[in-house]
Length: 249
Length: 348
Ligand SMILES: Nc1ncnc2c1ncn2[C@@H]1O[C@H](COP(=O)(O)OP(=O)(O)O)[C@@H](O)[C@H]1O
Ligand SMILES: [Mg+2]
Image (cartoon, rainbow over all chains, first blue to last red):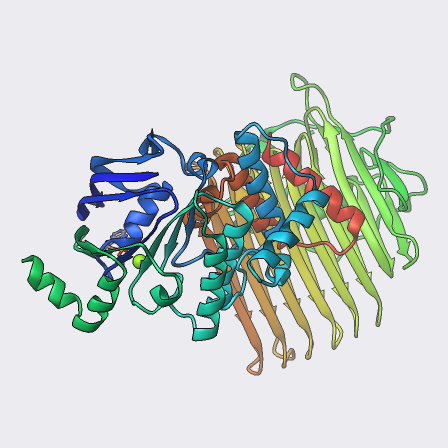
């Protein structure tokens, strides 16, 4: 589904990704673990199409299509979704209006008729209850004055509504207490399906107890240095990143 | 005729040049026919080139602003208005200018307001002209007046909104500056009676080579009054915004609480804003804060919207409107109208 090949990325002349290669098949859940500053969010942003990165080498293909040629919104229309590490507050932008606009823009891009306000609000309710979340968050301006936990929950709620096929979760667990973590994980698990893939970025193994990955990759200095099954996460938790570093070197 | 301005304070006109306005020869606006469109449910008053039915002789104001003096000198008369809470009033001021090849029209409507209620003033026009309207408010003890001004001029607009708040009164003024080549609003609010609460808000949206200058003065003369001020601006192309915000707290005005904020976003490289907050505080037991920010549209916010599938043009419009929406009007019919005008202006 997604294929990243030998990706080299610089920001303001500084090398951040150094030949990253990653292949994710349909229905698979991959986890990327790495210390702060290893380039995880940069990878997420580059896949999602944020400006300001210089891609000096490499390709990213989504179902064979060259993502690097596309604008962020076109990627979203194809079914890409990024749950942000730091969701942005948008005071004055009502959540329900924002989501309907995003949802209908995607439908139009796919040649489907947009949903009316009434149809969409019914759909919104369904999706919120599907991921067992309160739609109360959607009655406010997007993330405006939300707590850290509310913001992360809102990302998953948006994911449920937009129903993407490829989801990146960037440290969705950070700053969540155990209850909030379980709510978020349960939501993600409900959305798992044979035609959907996930890239779960995390710092700690904890989240992966709840969202069990098929593959785990360890990222150091902008590169994947070790890959394995879900047991790699546990091993990493036990032995630490220095262990990987020493083993690679 | 040439305009003969006396008593221009250079520091009040530092960022707005009058050389073009003063170099033109004007003809005085005449009593002609025109039409305006009015808000439903409002008492409607049409003013054309300063003329309306039932004008009284314009009285002197105690303002020393040069364009206010000019208005008193040339105004065909004053519209004396006593607002009532059950019937909001909508005045549409039309200025019929000359075609650009001949001398522009000078118009000086004057309106004096008291009572209690809501007043909306719209300014429209055609051709070449300079419109110099002056509106004064006397808010009596315990009364409440709300004022909304919507500027969509074809020519230039140099205006004054002068308000005096007496004991336990409330006044709010919201100035929307949309169209007009040169717009200058002198908004002066005097808190003259204890426990008065005054609000000055404004939203300016400039594009092409528009110049929009809001020069505001809040004068706390007595103790225990509060004022709130929020002026926001959105500037595109090579438009220019100016904000002057003076807050005066006189020696007797203890326990004053004044909050001022000026925020602007620049949508293009060639647009500019000059913001000049000034606190002149002579009392010691007061709470005054002011803040000014200038920025671009937030790239992270833009990316957030686009990453969800919102196309870039729409995403930008959503963020600009969200920025503008902080300047609120409580009346539903007006806020709907304003929203429509903002959309129109942004898609021009
Ligand atoms: N916009 C940027 N400008 C400059 N440096 C950046 C920028 N974004 C990220 N970096 C740097 O790139 C490195 C990787 O950052 P990031 O991708 O956020 O790592 P992670 O998500 O793994 O913590 C860090 O050293 C960070 O300081
Ligand atoms: Mg990160």
